Image 1 (cartoon, rainbow, N blue to C red):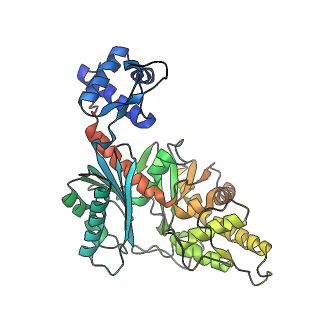
Image 2: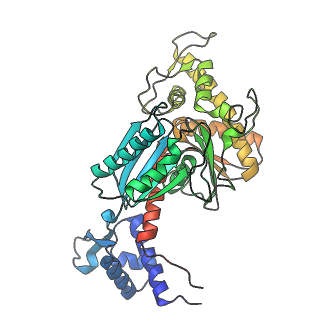
Image 3: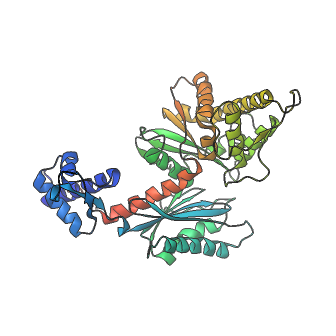
Length: 424
């Protein structure tokens, strides 16, 4: 059944807006070429979108050709302002951006474990309000929130989870009330996977698993382009996976004894210490000390050192102290032992889902880079008949904020951009 004229216009408008968002300012001629629409149809949609205040002329192209054909059209970026929050157990970070995703302001605040629920919520909301004011945003249209824990698939709310501060669950409601904005809450690992798929190492994959390696450990599952959350929102709670090599089994109230006990930040730091690698006494960033150790170990192995690679190697009992060879051997032994551990979790995921690609995300995955990913893949090849590529995440801990910003932007665009509602 052919689309009605109004439906056809909505389809064309949305297509043009998506192209302008993805490729930047375009001329009417470029829109005609990219959409395959006729010149009159493109002229009509440009006029409609300008009248709606969604696009405007942002410049001209071509040194020789001037006039209407040279006009560059772009999305009106300040039509809506967005916020993204990365909520951690000890604080949060917020960014405020325009409709194109350009970050206008960013801030963080620590929230101690002894802070009461009410004061903690007030600190968090006040930080968002101050950051929005600094960005020049009179109001926020949409707010994306990334948080640890399970998201109820029916309500979209953060579920009550043991071990997480109570203020986490109160925050979304407080933001919605104070800001009059649309607030969307998502598990932090799921947001990291979204960011890696949109803007990281998984842009060419519609099926993959992201293994989050940060302070904690988790996984996000993307199958056929869709994020899978599970019946209770618990898909990817890999920290609870029973694995060999731990002192016990996980329980319904704690993941100690599960994969978390092998691959969580504290476990990795302990493993590094066994190999004579210790992080700096005073880390200079918010990343887990384990990430600093991993980055330094990669550098000692001949990898490219990056900012923060300040862990120092101390000699193992049977090695001569203060020698470069000692550092390299200790680093190699540590990275191989870590790869052994990570391969257990990756092999379990591969056996069940056969994703074809596993991304080592989070601060530790990024710190390990291609070197650690290669070691894990080597072990996986011997453990599973299913071909699986292991990649290092490109966005590290910043993936949560970027994913939250994508979520907020998608929500704003769905409301502001003309929607295509299929006709029966």
